[in-house]
Length: 131
Image (tube, rainbow, N blue to C red):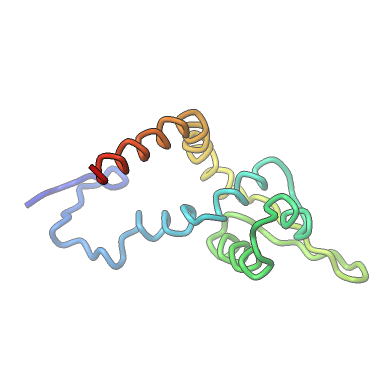
């Protein structure tokens, strides 16, 4: 029987309900194509919806709305509506989001520093598959 540690407690992976895996549940949301980019932006300052749309121009309005709602639902960001005409909305990082961004920023830094190596490894692998 294989035992692993999760949050400092022993976890029996043989009986673990992988459908309710806490690691998978959390990482699925933050590892999304758009989530990381939006969290990175909001880690620096609050943004209005339109500003976020301009920061990530290849995201559709529907996907931006859905991703922001998902991040808000998980408690990483909060949404504030201002009583202007028309109403304006601003998104900002929560304490939970900031606690997430600390380790996430290290992954983002690593990705930037190692992107060329990853791309080279992909080319090498793809070429070996053709041979």
